[in-house]
Length: 393
Image 1 (cartoon, rainbow, N blue to C red):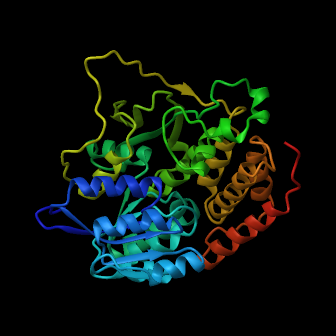
Image 2 (tube, one colour):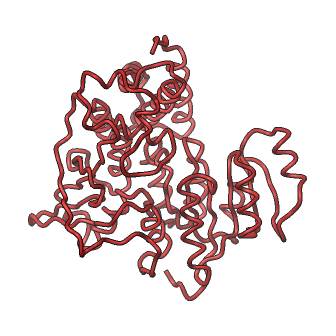
């Protein structure tokens, strides 16, 4: 990418964890990038602060219209900021000539629509919204190829694989992709006690600072199951060539094993700003404010196999990655809904994978679904979880 010209960037989901980190990266490289669009769902106070600082051409709120949203839309402008509402406004902004790069950090399946708009407009999509690939990975990648778009991963694990693959002549050289996982906040708990884990305990991640839903996914390792599905579509690698290991230090973000036996890994202290910046500047690298390795201090790097009894979600991930079709949409929707039930105290942590298994097993499978079918299956799975009989926690 030619960084001699300022690239115009849209940050979708700017008030979330990834969005805030993205703005921090862009704040450090204002000579190379200009923020032309930001969006949020409902954190209006923070969103207004971002408008005041960055003066994007467009600022879009996607949450339901309310008194607070109406007040914001009618409130003071920040310079030349054009205040808008709704996903249609996001899609229009993404497709416009005033955007070169889209950082897709909208949470949930709602992010799929803007991801599709970005690739159909031939943009570079720095993708943090895992649901886009889990729900519609094959479809999204075909659309990107048809329209000449780039999809670069922002997830630390997939960014690590993407970086390691630069040592290769192509995916034909690859033996295995090895995703690393922290194991989550409950990795050292006795298995028989996991069903009694509280919401607070499940949200106490030892390494990463993430949103509530993603942190619960880390506790069940459903996040890694979904990342297996992502990797299968993003890199075009069969599911049986994807491995997962637990790496508690979260220093090795993932590895690629090549056919000659060499393994190339990407290492760095946990800091989401690094994969975000790489997706923005690839194939170049710029100086950054990211945390650095401390070479004057001893480090221990270890990894362990995944215990399927402790993390039954992993089997679901590999099964869905192999089968494809509508399975990703169903698993993702069932998990999102089940995690919300857990956060509300209505089910136990260990019920999440069981619910997802039940819903997945009972859905009407389609091997080559269109987008409408995927969205219908998403809604069906959420309705099924809503019928699940709550337990007393």
